Amino acid sequence: MTKTEFNRALAIAQDMDIPLLGIHEDVNIMGYGLEGFTPVETTIMSAAEAIRYQCLQFNGAFDNEELNKVRHDFVVRNKVLIEGLGSDAIEQGCQTLDFINEFVKEISNDASGN
Image (cartoon, rainbow, N blue to C red; front, side):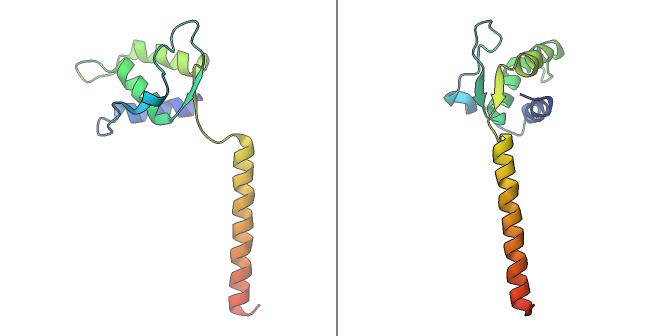
């Protein structure tokens, strides 16, 4: 998980208007702090739920000491990886957008008589 992904997950975790209960049932994130824990790939929402579960205090504030531990496990130790686009998928997406843009230009030129 990158720092940016962690910050996104943290922002979601801190927004109490976003319900997160039970989101990560398909992937077991819990136990990420244990030495033998194998890194898992999951969604940003599941990571947010784990952050909220681990760091939220009864008074509604987040425990900064615990948050630093979670950040260390998620980002430094790479125990939680976010599902997403790898560089190959991003390149393919860019090529697809270029193709679509060229196609739209051709249609526009044909429609205008050029």
